Image (tube, rainbow, N blue to C red; front, side, top):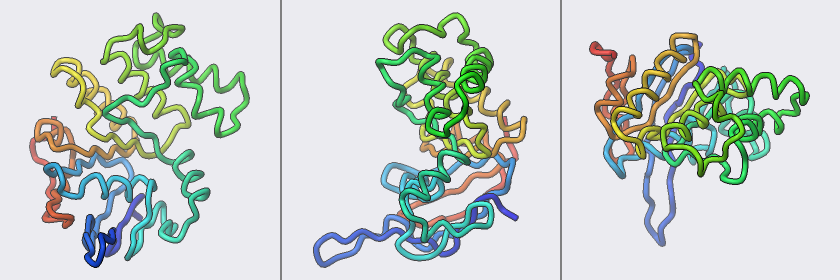
Length: 230
């Protein structure tokens, strides 16, 4: 059974008397443990598809299943619960809190999941060590490089041990060398069994994936197995 499945999923926005189909009858299966790239130019609908796949939004038409459950009819609070337990997010702009230390940023998702204090601190320290930032644990984002901030975001995305990691242009604000380190890290996380979904317009990033979903004008044009996986 796919971990995520879209069945004829559409997202339609009303603009006066006209309709804009940001996503048009998308059908997609993502299996547990896959590394999938959603690839397309700006305005192609990939961000809308990401929001649907990541349970940040529900389709106007069609259905979305997460681990066999139809989330298309979930309330916002139910979607928030699903996101918190199942999906970890890594965004291009890092989205870490400027007033919190590295330790506090990584701990935060576990606070929302009501994890005991001692357990969440122990896990946060382990994750910070995992991404190579033990020496920066008490530093705030302003004291970190862009690459270090993104590593904090990676650690935070793993905090609740989600089955799915969703990256939205996660190297967009990084130089190529640092970006490669982040992508190599995601590949290692994938090898450990996590499902990775990468949203990008960059072909070099898409090449890390096992499967590439091409989207244009809100439609999934084709889905290809990647023979040149890095």
